[in-house]
Structure formats: structure tokens, C-alpha cells
Image (cartoon, rainbow, N blue to C red; front, side):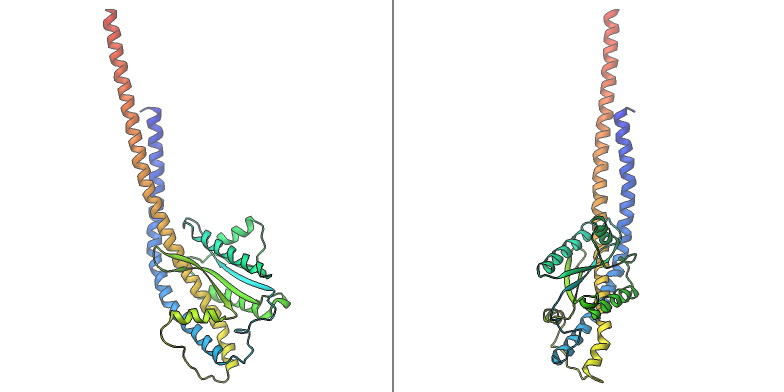
Length: 301
């Protein structure tokens, strides 16, 4: 075996080893995305119904001054929760989320607001640390399989900072950047304003559900209902955002690994063809040398 042919054979073995890894990762992502989609399907109706309930209370009690629905007179600091992935090999999933977040941050800063980032996922944390940009808090280690406890931990921190307000080191409004799962081939980065609950968000959630806004009777009073709904609303919306992002991450990883596996297959074919061509060239050269040697011997005799 010639040197060139040996190089091609080594490359073929290397690519085949990589192909086994990408194929395994593709199968793992495919199996896990099924459960992630089911979790999204179970979580979304609850999040929508809870938002509709909060919206109904807010619409029916517009004269009540409550932190959940009342715009701050002077918004100085805006919190932005950015949901990214813990691991890579998921195509442009985290890149798209960070791009959407940076566009939102630019708009908020143009409005004269100080942006306070809160980051979910090691990719987002790495993005900020590499650029030496400050951020308020981080949560990692669960992006592809979030639990409600993770959402509660995040929600408690965000609610605490929102209730404090900018004058006490908190924030005056909260936004969430996450990736909405629409299908196995379509995932879209999305921005929602979590707090205070704006009119546009109420209308968007109303469009997601069927029927008119429900009417409720409040016991003991609207203020008490809003106080009870505040942490549940925040946690439910954050949990749904985490689940949507997890399903999107797994779908993007499956698609990326399938593409890598297909590329590895084509690369093996290419290297195999080149190796065969190198082998044929070596054989042709050897035959030419034999024929030339034979001719030289015949001429000498």
C-alpha cells in the first residue's frame, strides 16, 4: 500500500468513527425530543389559561395599583432572561437566541433603560464571560430536561428583583428570550414581556386560546387574587419557556447530527473513491515499471 493510499484509509477510519458518534447523538436527541414535545403540549394550555386568568383579573380591576399589571412611571432598569443551551452541537440554536437577545437589549438601551441580563445555559454564560460583559445571575445544567423546580428557582429570583424595583437594586420590567417550538423543522426565537403584563401580551395569549375572556368572581378580593397569582403566573410562564426551549434544542441537535452523519457518509464515499484511484495509479505505475524493465532487458540481450 502506497503512502497516499494509506493516508486516505486513515481518513476513512477517522470519519467513520466520527459518524458513529454523530449517529448515536442523533438517535439520543430523537428519542428525547418526543418526551420534550409531550411536556410542551402539557404545559402550554396551563400557561395560557393562567395568563388569561391574570389578564381577566387585570382587565376587570384596572383601578387597582398592583405590581403585576401596573406600568412603572420611570423605568430605569429592565431585566432580560436569556434561555440558551448547556451543550453545543445543536446548529444555530443558541446563536439565534443570543442574536434575538442582543436585538432586544439594543432596543431597550435606545429607550434609555439599563439592561440587567439573567442567563440560562452554559452557552449564554460563555458568551458573556468571553466578552467580559456583566450579568446578574446564571442557571445551568438542565436546559435539555428542565424541571419545575428550576423554573421556581428562576421565577423566585426574578419576582424578588421586580418587586424591589430599580430604586432598591431590582428591575422595573422583565423580558424573556426563548426559542418557541413549532415543529421538528421550525423553531423560532421569541421575546415576551413577563412583567408587568402588558396589553399586547394579554391580546397575544387571548389569540392562542379559544373563546372570549372569562369572567371571575374574586375571593376575598382582587388584590388578594393578584398576590396569589403573581408567583404562579411567573413560574408557569418561565417553565413553559424552558420546556419550549428544551424541545427546540433537542430538535435542532437531532437535525444538526443528521446533517453531520450524512456529510460523513458522503466524505467516506469521496475518500474511498480517491483511495481506489490512488491504488489504480500505483498498480499502473508498477506495471509500467515492469514493462519498462522487461523492454530494457530485451534490448540488452
